[in-house]
Amino acid sequence: MDIQGFLSRLEETDEIIRIRKEVSPEFEACAVIGKIQRELNKGVFFNRVKGHNIPLASNLFGSFDRVSTIFGSEKELLVSRLSMIEQDIPCVLSSETSHRKRLKVNELGSQLPIVTHYGKDAGPYITGGLILAKDPESGVRNLSYHRMQWTTGGELRFCINPGNHLGMCIDRAEERGQDLEAVVLIGASPVSMLAGAFKVPFEKDELGLAGALQNDSVKIEQCQDVDLEIPQDASIAIEGKVIKNLRKPEGPIGDWQHVYVGPNENYVFSASVITLSQNPVFYTILPGSYEEVVLTGLPISVSIYRNIKKISLGVKDVTIWPYLLFCIVQMEKGCGEQAKQAGLAALGTNMSWVKYCIVIDEDVDIYYMQDVLWAIATRCSMEKDVIRIKHIPGFPRDPYGIHTGRVIIDATAPGGIEGEFEKKQVPFEKKIRLADYIGN
Image (cartoon, rainbow, N blue to C red; front, side, top):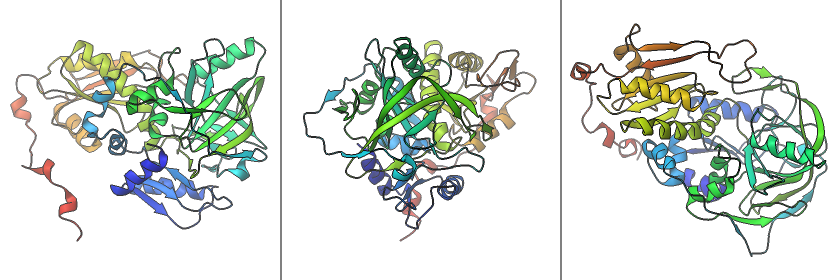
C-alpha cells in the first residue's frame, strides 16, 4: 500500500480532512494542520498549495487508530503484534520499467512545497522525509528521519543525533575521503515510514523491516543519478550526496519540546535530481505533534513491551503518550508488585526518552489520558507508589539538567483489595458504534 492507498483507506473511515482552499506553505499550512490536530486530530490533505502543483499531506500517523488500519487490527493489539515481528523480508528489485518523472534540481523550495512551520524557524524544513543511504563497508541500507533545512539551490542542511546509524555511514565515507550518496524519500509508503522510525541493529536493512511489516517484499528500483535503490512506490525521491567534511549552520527550528533549538553546525546534503511518482504527495510532520509522538514512540513502546514480557507475562500494552517523555504500561489485574518491576524494566529499556513511567490496570484506557490521570488520582499513594530515581541523565540534548532523574508512578489498584477499587462500567459501552446513532 502506497501513500495514495493509505489516503483512500483513511477517506473510507472518515479519518482525513481535505482542504480545497489554496494555502501558503509558509506558516499557513502549519497553522491549519495544528488547529485540526488539536481540535479533531484527523489527517490533513491540501489539494492546492500556493506556487506548487503537488498536494501536501500531514498527520496521517497522528493517532494509533490510524496506524492500526495499516495492519487491519485494533489499536490495543498494535504493540503486541509488532513485537512478534522477528524476521525481515528482503527487498526485490523490480523488473518493471520505471515511470518516474525526472526533474533536474535548481531551487528545491520552488520545485517542492517545503513548509515553513514556526515564526523563528531559519526557513523551510523537510520534516517528513526519510534519508536512505548505504553503509560504505557492508552495503546495508539505512533509513532514518532527519529534519532538513532548505537554504538555496539543492542544498539541505540536517541534524543527526548521537549514535545515529546514518552518522556512522557518513563517518565511514569520510574516512575513505568520499561523499555519501543518499536519497531523501518524501511521501513514502506507510510501512516504509514506520520502518524508518524503528531503531534496528546497524547490520539490518530497514527496508527489510518494511517488508516484514507488510508481510511482503518491498519492490525497489534503481535510482537515476546515484548508486542506490528506492522503494518503487515512493512518492518523491531527491537524489544527491552528503558532502564529506562539510558542516554549515542549521536552525533555529521549533522542535519536539515546543521550543527553538539551534543554530548548530550540521551536515550538508547536495541534491541533483528529483524523481516523482505518477501522483506525488509531499509530506510534512509538525515537530512535537501527535504524529511525531506516534512515529517516534511506537518503536520505543514495542521494545519496552518486549523487555517487560521477559520478566512478566502480565503486561497488556505499552504506549509513549501523549508526549515523548511519558511511558504508560498497562498490566493485567492483580499484578501486585510486578507493576513496579515493569516500571523499572521500562526505564531500563530506553534511557534517553522515558522520563516518567506510569503503570495502570487493564480496566484503564491506556490511550485516554484523562483515564490514566484518574487512576493516578484514585489508586496511587504518593507515599508508597511514587518512586523517584535521582542523578540519571536522560535526553542527550539537556544542557540545564532538566531531564536528569526518573519517576515511576504505580497507579494500579492496591493488591489484595482490588475489589474496593472496581471501576464503574456501562454495560455494552464498548460495543456501541456512534455511527449507528448519529447522522442519517
